[in-house]
Image (tube, rainbow, N blue to C red; front, side):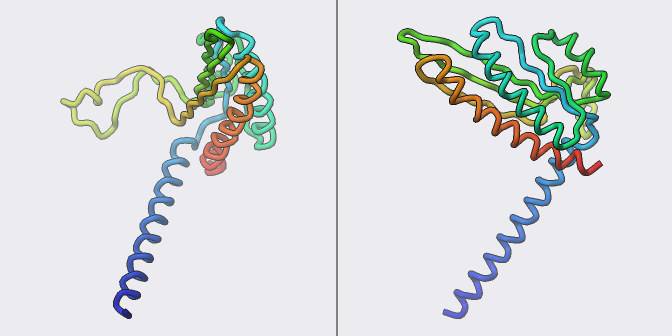
Length: 191
């Protein structure tokens, strides 16, 4: 019996050490992802279909974003109804900010059923990205351009009536903006 108890204690201490190491590695990874950015730009992706839904979710998210950024003293800006060129041009006023993009796609079916997909992602465009550890014969060693997504959270909701769906989705989007800020601040404060 005593051997079983000792074995259980040994396994528990080994697992807690492993979990602590995993937490430390995750924390270090998060700090590395979000350290050094000069601010955050929230971009509400323009959406010509179901503009009322996209605008309502963007308005709610913008208020939450402003509140969190101001209270965290993070330089910030909101880009709404700007194309990508305008957005990056205006983002330059913040130095090298991380882009937090809010994309809202909605559809309405027969009988008034509305479905909404919202994707919230923190990203930045790179024109010449490579994998530093890639061997020369590996395709990852060749410079490539594109968006690097550092954090992402997709959300889906459906229901009857656009206003009901927005009322259900907006707080969920705001909660995920809070989750993003919690991660971002770990790197931001590590300057």
